[in-house]
Length: 451
Image 1 (cartoon, rainbow, N blue to C red):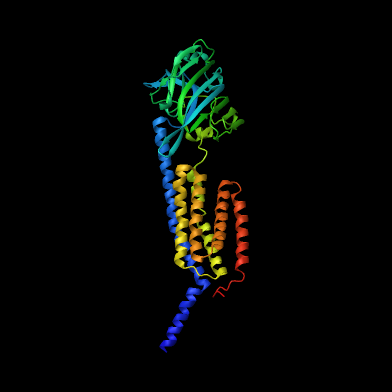
Image 2: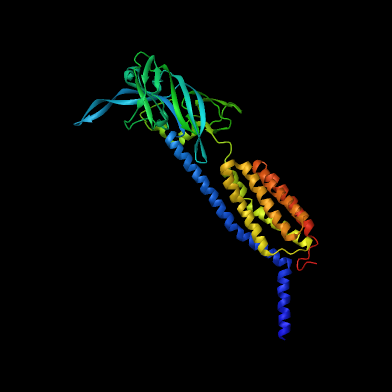
């Protein structure tokens, strides 16, 4: 009786050891376990990417931040007589209110000179720029505002504009307006049209209801982005720079652009029909400071780095489980077809090597870039696993075939990463082919016990 029990137990143990179904169940469990270190690697990539963002922000803080050019706006105080009650009697009182006028024509020509600043192994794009602004203000339409020319205090007019980070100014802007040369200064009255306002007093007494031309140049430093606020009734902007990979964003895309290895030139021309601001208004000092309206009227250029290794490494890591699954399935089919048993612990070691692959990819990409890092990590992992399998199976041809299979897998992922727009199409076709091959090679497998 005891002998029969031992024989039955031995049979059960042999079935567990030799059953293909049990081996597949173990492989499935191992893949689920490998999801844990895979997710930890994703966290590591995000941490390193966040570190890069911190370094870029720190560099920008010390150099100068992203710049948005706003203005100019003409501000003219005017007298207004209002009725008041004093001791039960009706009287009049003169108050000072404000008229705001936007440019009739606004022309901007910006020339950027970008450069890379390095902090350890991280890079940030900064720039020096010369930005020339010119245009004119037309005669105010006073009748629509129920005003008369004699109400305007033209001798106390102001011209105001803004840039995002005043630290980026390399010298004091000198404005030529209405035949006068005046220097702009920061405004700290608490009633500015913009945040970080610069303004200057101009005497428009010799003009006709405030009509005049203007021009000034900003010598400006900034980081990564340069944007403009569409304020002219007609706004023309031209931006050029010696940067080969610009990105144009905001509410309006350029009407024309030319990009080559030497740099770029982009031009915008916009009319006021879809501008979220009126041409003139009175008393509303905060009208231009509305965040949503500013967003709807802002456009410009972003000087992006050609390659973001963290973004590509993140996308690559999302295919980790697919690569591990295909590798284990290929190893399993090799085991079944050659009728050579591979111990489960060896599957664990191969899985560990494929997880370490992503750490290699991340660490090397920070030093030598994504493409070369992908090549180094892939070749290292393929050689390691292939040599290991050759020692297990005692067959160099089988190991060479497995190395070819792994190479195809990694090449497949690399192609998907590079072809962003076609990734779904290429990926679905490749998975269909892989499924068909698995069907073909598994059709004669005895799932309970190998022959």
